[in-house]
Image (cartoon, rainbow, N blue to C red; front, top):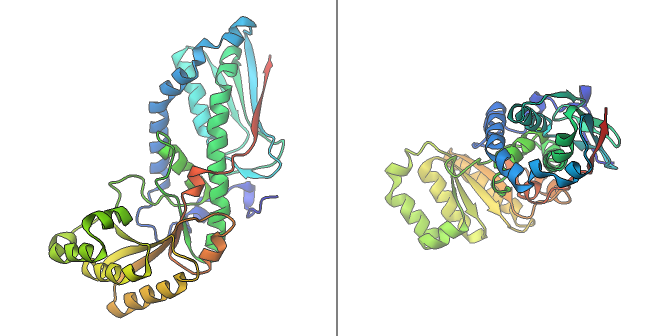
Length: 333
């Protein structure tokens, strides 16, 4: 059984989510992410309908399945999971209702963020039987993927919270689904990190290599100090080698506030690097946040959380989450 914290109404409350969002400079308001997700859904839905040829379902037409019906989405998953995407599935059927001038009655039995156990029902929708069949797979795919992301996030964010560490997603999302997947992260209790490239400056290894190395990057910041100090967006510098940390710290001193990302550095070396960063931040009286990234999984995240960075980020939760087994029953009425 998946280990999950227990809350009243089996709901992950908003105040609990917010405690994970302490230090991430890229974090957005929860409502803003949901609005962006809904807007993305509106843009994608026609593509999805066309992709699956939903209005050309020859199986349903051949069998002459007409009239009214009810579809029930429920869990076949052996372990508990966190559901996400109920409102989006509801939106899809409301969209079809307007497009095809039909009516659906939607009865949510769970809310996004609820814990769902095996055989528990999630959502009932009553309406046009052929459309229930045609939109079944699209709805299941969306609900399962977002629930998988929310559930994996919850496990990892909960572990991080025990050590006062924030857990963040990355930009390693499915093309065309970023805001929907970031919404699922939020439902699971994670922070967004950057939503897009304009949210913050993240100087990674390829940037550093292209500019000529860590020393060349420092020289660039020294040369452009006055201009760079006026940047209001958060600045983060990736460090992959211990010898590059000195350059990154010097850059932090120039701009006065920044984040250092320790990326793919062996776990046994991280405590020394964190100690150096904390000491430098204290001595120079500048705000330097520490992020650990690279190869983070549910199986090892606690080892990294114990090292007490400010936050941990993982592409795993949006790249390869464990998707729960959600099914649907359709009946004529």
